[in-house]
Amino acid sequence: MGMWKKALTTAAMATVLMAQTAAAEDVKIALVVKALGIGFFEAAAKGAEEAAAELGDVEIIYTGPTSTTAEGQIEVINALIAQGVDAIAISANDPDAVAPALQRAMERGIKVISWDSGVAKEGRLMHLNPSSSALIGNTIIKLAADHIEGTGDVAILSATSTSTNQNIWIEEAKKVLPNYPNVNLVATVYGDDLADKSYREAQGLMATYPNLKAIIAPTTVGILAASQAVTDAGKIGEINVTGLGLPSEMAGAVESGATISFAIWNPIDLGYAATMLSYNLIKGAEAAPGASIPMGRIGAATLDDNLEAAMSDPFTYDKSNIEEFKSIF
Ligand code: RAM
Image (cartoon, rainbow, N blue to C red):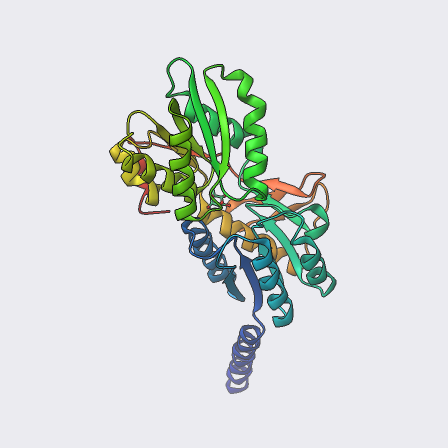
């Protein structure tokens, strides 16, 4: 009996030792964002930490440049290569400019995925879209069209001119414009996901297009800045600001009426899923067309021929539901 007990104790000790070894060998997953200080990415980082807590042997390195440039991201990538991380999950400021640095990372055995804003196929193993790009493109036009009576001028206030995700959504939006005869797209301008530049671009639109009925900003930074600019110009009720925003940041604009409605998917889930995918690639999952890679509580990502997968549909927020969501993301 004594021997048996002793054997058990030894086994238990071995388990403890193994756990300690595993902790010392945590896998390092870098979440590289377009720029630091953007609420959307901070919410994604929360999801990444949630995944790490669930997995138990993951360290998240949340990083990015101070402004939304590809050059800044290349510096960050090079530092992560030097540091020897196990995976890089990036939301890119430019699909092509960051690809060579990411290829170097992959040559050194680092698993690279893009999420949110994609990298050209040769620069990543796979890409996770938040939703179907066509659906997002259609949604942002519909949100504007729904509140225009008769014909109305609308303008798009985007992020950077090289941003993969916004450019695809705008392209998809333009494809469906013929279905919305009351929507007259007069301009597309770029606020670079910087609050002050986005604000000034919104002011510029109001000055140039006196008949503007809506500003469509498919960026959380742009929509917030534009709603502020419209409010400050005393144009609530005249110009509706819509697009993609965070309930936590847009609650005031919805309350004031500067924004009637806007859409978004869950950014926490997106960061969580990107982390789970990175982890499974580190652990040997193959990113191949048709492959299904687990994303923890979200389910699995099934890769298409372009090695892309999409998560969920965007959800629309307005006065009826914003209170419920503004404390979540
Ligand atoms: C901003 C970023 C991000 C985009 C959201 C909607 O936070 O541009 O890439 O997905 O807006």
